[in-house]
Image 1: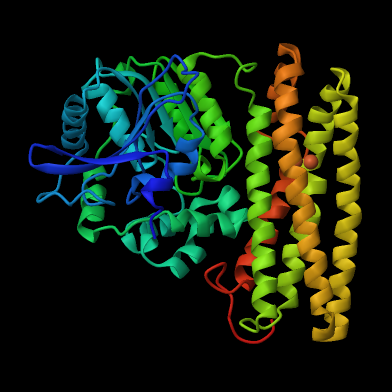
Image 2: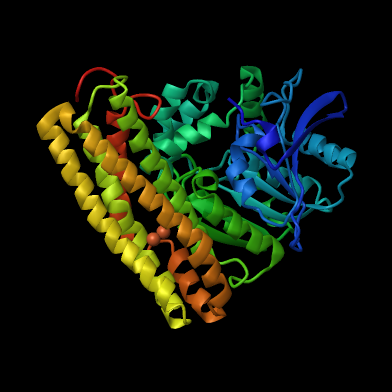
Length: 474
Ligand SMILES: [Fe+2]
Ligand SMILES: [Fe+2]
């Protein structure tokens, strides 16, 4: 089900270019406009414009133009197959029709190929280029062949259960760690025409930019996921090596980092497009917000599961409940709060906001106590059976409320305070620590253990959350 456009910051319209109808979404810049954009986005294969909405919502202060490629979302399929060069020509005319001059261009995955073609074919139309999770075409270093074959079918956009199973394998990174992200992502998907999908495959088939990448003149930002199973990191290194004025930034995530880490991705893009400094656009704040979003998704998943059990729609599955609770236990203590304590709290204290800093630390401690109580309530439920379910559910709801309030306070009070008080040197230190490829605080090993834990949750959880059985226990 596609999100209602009335709730979206995108104004949706349809333009006709040379007999082809194209559905366009435009986000007008809010006040406090940045000196950048408009930004034109080429989306991934089979993806309608709503699918990148979490990312577009974070592109504060610039105008964004996004559209459904023919055969996807609300744009009817073309009558004949087309190539990237035809698509670039079509988009060039579309911009003309909409009254735009030069734009910045961003392409994701399949759309990254189209974006390279557009930048090369229309150098005056394209000022700056952002290439995300993409490659130089047929000379790319492929990911696992079984995954590439699965990419060849539009089924992944039509079948939610298939996607819940495939998504974490295909996209890796946070999508492997957190199945609820996949559910949220799929909820933004629209119907796609199989013909449109195959034409998109055809547009990319045999295409390569390797022969002319060195002639791309635009300043280029290359974003890549360290754990991308579809387009391994080596492809981004190849792009960075061939494009003269380019910078590579590696994100500690999989293929869909624009969706699983929208604030971090958007901050990197805004910095590049506007030339603004880390002080104006701190990455630490973006990463904390993205982690809050991921943690909230898991908590909601756990609450949903327990409500289903209480309503008698699902049998209790203690392996799954324990796996989810392990995540809820570990995520704040091992992944998230160490970052906040080491950086947010430390600099808040240093810059004269000791009361707020201590409140945060106190709540982190209270969170640990509450988690212990929650685990004990689950032990009692498992030992004592359904008589203990109500008490476990009550504990869980209290816990979710507490953590929700805590995150809200951080976002509404502590982070704005940090933005006001921290110096350029503070942000510099946070930036270096947070943007490092290998997370210096929690380390790759901890990240990988989250990854494993969530593979287990996906195997245990019933659809649409996971791929486990809906039958009796275990
Ligand atoms: Fe916190
Ligand atoms: Fe937090």
